[in-house]
Image (cartoon, rainbow, N blue to C red):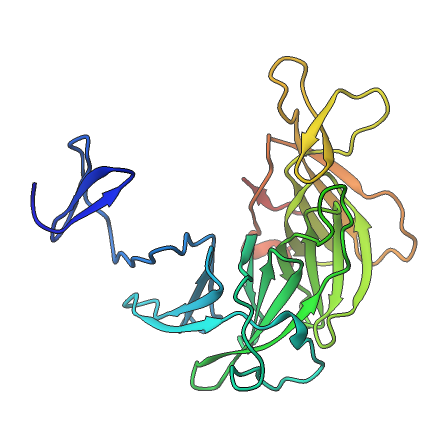
Length: 294
């Protein structure tokens, strides 16, 4: 076996200069630059609007900042402390307060503001971490926005997931995965302004003009007489009678301009509806458009 061995689950993997040999004699030839991030398990990526920095996060208590053209790691920024909520833009430094060593990115939820000066990260422990981007590209921790508790049967803290910003940057929309809601936050104070019921286990959210589209892993909320099964920390989800898995995924459509909280529209989608992508023409077209979903 060539030099450069590493061990994965007891098997030997050989790393060659331009390829990788697996334990079952397969040769893998990656395309482009490969950046190894041991222990991180990157779950989301966000590119700054000017294309100069790329950020990612996963199963570590840090936000990684990379150079998109070289893959070089520029910074490892600790998670801002939970008790560091503030209405100011002053950075939280290790000399002032200890970083949150238990925080980490949720299922998803990592975005830049439209001007590239802020980064928002959904923290699995029930908050939104806010980072600032200096003029020289340095990323600093600013504060945390605590979310209202979900108070699910087996977990109190909320689990935020997908994030989206209004065009003016004043409102942050958060898929609240555990309480089955979409939340609207003030981006300066973190105050919860409004919330809407959506489907079971919402994952992602995108905005199209005055509408919010929310993907729901578990589809519609169960009704009396539906066959259900357990999902997550005490939630119930519709299941089919043969496979006993979630029987559908859905997209909830919310009109953000409606003053009265009428029942939102529901679009049935494939199983476990997850990520969504918005067509570039969706915000300029006069015809109604829907996001592509995965």
